[in-house]
Image (cartoon, rainbow, N blue to C red):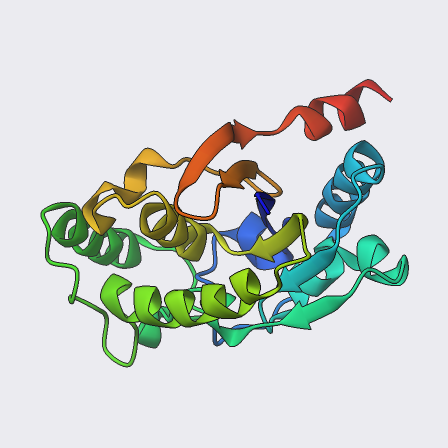
Length: 208
């Protein structure tokens, strides 16, 4: 059976708004805008007959797809979908020093040094390993045709490279904002993109 996989980033948190670094070790709630984004996504896609919802273990993803979960769609949390670990920078306010460190690290990844990581953090290669384990679980469910996944920005970029068989150094090719949707089709062998960085539901919210 072919699968259609909807992969979204969580809604905005107050830490997103303030520019504070959030990795897998920071478990922040959605703020008012984030809850509005989540509601807009639900209203736009509630008619899709999702067979299963997968999230990371972090509550900002649970809260983003809460209404789908409350509709009794089967829900599984997978730590393999958690955000990358930013190590010593998690929970740190944005500053020139932090921005410089991130610019340098992202440059290393783009240049192909995919084992590079901050102290106590994770590398893209390490994230890839746990994501592949998570997708083994997801794809085992043979009868699930429409799947909703809610996860995190950097981890989503890594995952899209993994699924589309692209080098991880290309991850910056996948832009995102809060509740961005990437819709993929899986034909039993490979994945292809049906919708790229889709935020139509947010425009719908603004028109209401």
